[in-house]
Image 1 (cartoon, rainbow, N blue to C red):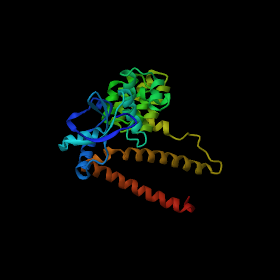
Image 2: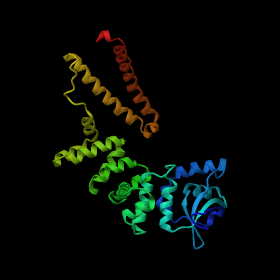
Image 3: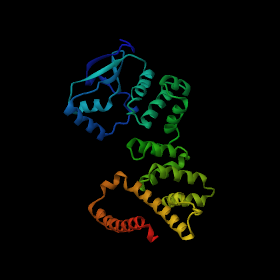
Image 4: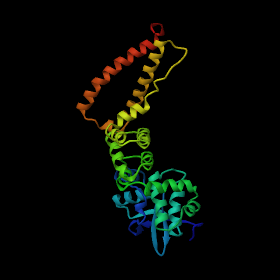
Length: 299
């Protein structure tokens, strides 16, 4: 058997080595979802293992493996390849490239392992994986330039990879503080990028303290339309209305972003009632605004 002639066969679950599990993020909810799917439809896709010295090391299919364990299955269908461990890690990236099942942080874990454990430099990793050197550098940054608290939050899904890439720009000592603000205020990736940019542009300690104490105010101010909004086709009063409409649109976008957060679905009944009352008022205002727009003569 060789890399060019892989075989497919049933392997006993207990004989599969999961030593590379640290290179993949596998959350309990995802495993339960896979378990239900496999219980209903069986195993639709083989796992991939690397064979070396009578050992079958799992390369791809960790959720399927853990689901099979929960189901008590004795065997799993496996695609077996024979290659070095470094090529096996590269195979994980290549195998998932088309389906994009690997998140940025999963990719970062594999790339960092090739550097720290297999002692490959960035150029060698790029050649082995087929990605560019800049791609390799960006993935390494998610491991090497983030503090441990942020990496742990990324693993747990508390923040996104987009938010983590923003935090990479900050000194390690500030990253955990910003991460806590992201979670506490349910910030979007765009909010995070704006806040980090404002912090890096600040010139005094007082400005930095204000950013840390009033993050949402800072974001709203940064997104506020410029005061010199002016359309020569409009009168003075028309331009006043234009500015107000721009501000209204900004606040609407901020609300849509925050309301779309997954935590909105976890609000309790009393919170929903309270917010529903306010929403009813907004709805009345929206209807009145729509009436004005539909009857331009009243402007």
